[in-house]
Structure formats: structure tokens, C-alpha cells
Length: 282
Length: 259
Image (tube, rainbow over all chains, first blue to last red; front, top):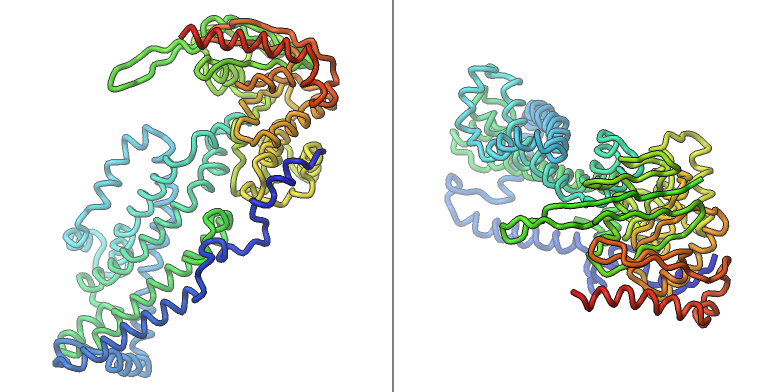
């Protein structure tokens, strides 16, 4: 074996030891998280300053919200509401992933299914679901089932659409590799198309987090008032604006955390992607 | 065993340009045979049908008419009697070099310890044993294509089909890959059908060169160079090399001026 070509090429090839973050932006000295923290401090300070100037019914500010948060934690209301909210959220969002990903895969892969089902997915994405909640209540009642269904219906479409798009973006040449080795359609789908589509799937799952959180609150507003949605409604009715903000912020933190967690999962299931794009964090 | 015949292959397809459908005759009654253990190079300007002929042989495209046989048996779809080496290696980016070689073997039904051993043996054959755990983006272009060759060889096909495999490599790497391929051919005695547009590469590698033009065979040239070819730098300086290269240049060039 002559090592000629290696000697020429190897220097330009990043080895496994190369630090991805460095190659992404060699001039960056401040860590990414520090920028985020500074941004948060500036935002919270400005909110605190301007929030104190207005009537506490019309607005609130971070320290008041923190106080309300602490009260809700001590009384155990927040934990109870969170548990109550998360159950339909997890079931609906989980089902959206379990159904949405395979659906997107087969729609993208088989033109008959694309022609038959694609329009429903595209139209379903734009569906004004809030308007349909009363109808869903007639079908599924006021309890757990309808809440999970609302979350499912809100979050499944971005997952399916993204997966579908990802499948259509898989290079034809990679599929031909499967064909050249006499792989069946099912094997090509599982061994080539699924891994090639993973970045798109994960992006869809991330996009769906926000919609699922919104869907969860909508469901709690319009069906049996419960969970975090109930805290929002009840405190708004009592003009307790600071307490109203607590579940809103908890939900935003929850969605951000979930987003981060999905990013970590993506790096675990598709480590080559971060290596190729040279990104250390998202 | 490993004799491949293209018998009267024609391929016509429809191309949509600016809303109009054009019928293109990519291959027009092409016939030739690659004998067992022989290296035949298909050469010609782009659009001459050489890649289409290779893809039809692999079974990635169907001919409009005509037959392809491997050792006398007609083949219509992809099969393990033919191993394909793609233009840009086309390794699966989420698999390591070793796993990429294992992929073809797994498709063929190999399982267990023998799977890893076999893949490792072929990775060793192309000199990449040390890089088995690397992913494609951690390999140079030349190394990627060596994995591609190992993947195709590992399923032990009767014939190796290579579609401009070194076209995307720099000149130095390409030369070392040509020497590599000659070495692999000497050791495995595989029948090879190789597509290129590089005259030097064609003469260096081939026993026979099939020159194509506009979907037809323009000329078939025997390469009077001995095997093993030995030092490629020395071969390059021989009169036989220059004469063969000139003859092919004329056949290809004549085609281009007639456009």
C-alpha cells in the first residue's frame, strides 16, 4: 500500500481528535452560554425596571413573579399542576413522534402515499385547531383523552412534514448504494433513508415542542380547566398578574429545556451530523 | 468466472427541457464482452453513454432493448455477481469505514463474527485497516474511494463495475489509486469494467479500451502493454503507451470535432 495520497490529504482532514467548536469559529473567545446569560440579565433587569413603573394589574416584574413562584411551590400547587399538565402533554407529544415520523417516512418514500396523504398533512398543518376543540370535546369528552388529542393534533404535522421533506432530500446516489447491494425497499428505508433523514426528523421534533406546549394550554383552557392552564386562568380572573406569569414562564423554561434535551438526543443518535457541520452546540 | 456481455443494448429516455419532451438515444445497439479477469475501460466525451452502459450493466437502469449477461446468465436487476464502485464513493456518512464495508456483506446475508472479519480483511486489502473506526468525513477523498472499492470487493462479485471512481481526486492521489487498483487486480484477478474520460488512466489500466461516441462504439483498442504493468512512471515513457494514447485521443477527438 502506498501512502502517497494520505500524506498529501491527511492534513486537511480533521481527525477524530479535532475539537469541533474551534473549527466552527476560531475567533470566538467568549463561551456561548456566557452570551446567553448576559442577554438574560439585561432582559430581566430592563423588565424589572419598567415593570415596577406600571400598575401591578396591567403588568408584573421578575421579583414579584419570583415571589409568586415561591408561594406556588411552597403550597404544592405548582408541582400538582405541572404533573397534571404533563401527563396529556407527554402522551400527545409522544404519540405525535411515534406516528408522525413513520408517516413522514412512507409519504416521502412512496409516491402513491404522497399523492394520497400529502394534501391532508399539508392542510392539517394549517388547521385552526382551536376552532375544532369543541368538536373534539363532543367526541372525546372533557378529560385526559381530549387534551392528549389536542396536543397530538397540534404537534404531529411539523414532525411529519419535516420527515417527509428530509426523505425527499436524501441523495438518490445513497439509495442506489442500497439497490446495488440488492437491499429491499424496507431495508433501504430503515438502513439508508431513516439515518439520512434523522437531522430533519430531529428538527421537526424540536419545532413541535413549542406547538405541543401551546396545545396543552389551549386544551386546559377550553376543556376541563386544569393544570398550569388553570393557574393562568384563575389568577387572571383574580387580577393576580404576577401569579399568572408563573406558569407562563415555567412553560417557556420547560420548552427551552426540552429543546436542549432533544438537541442532546440528536447528538447521541446522529453524532456524525455535528461532526460534519462542525457545531459544538445549538 | 466473470464474463460480462452487453448484447445489442439500446437505451432511449425522455428529457424534459423548457417544457418540451426530447427523446434521447443514450445507447444505440452497443455490444461488447469483458472476458474473465480482463480490465475493459469505457471512454468517451461526456454524454457519450459510457456511464449509462455501466449503470445498465449494474441493473440500476433498464435497457430499452438488448440483454446483459454475466457468465451466460441474463441479468435484469442488481445482483451480488456485480459490485459497483460509485463516482464519489457514496459511503454512508453515519457508518465507520469498517461498517461501510460490512453493509454490503450484511445485505448479502452475512452475520456474526465472520462478517467483521471479512470486512476487516477487505479493508486491509485496500490498506485502511488502521482507519477502520473513522467515519467518511474523517477520511481523505482517496481513502473514501478505497473504502468504496473494499465494499464492492467484499461481496466477492464476478465483476467490478467502476464509474469514474478517481475522477474527483487530485492528480497525485489518482495515480497512486491507479497503481493500487492494478495491484488489487493482480491479486484478485477480478473482471473489471471501468468508466473514465481520462486517456492516461484508460491506457494505464486497460487490457482493452472501448471508445464511445454518441451512444455507439466508435473503436475498440487493444492495449499492448504487459501485465503486471510495474512502475507506472516507466510505462508512461514507453512508445507503446504513447501510440495507444494517441490512437484513443484521435478516436475521442474525432468525435468531438464532428459535433
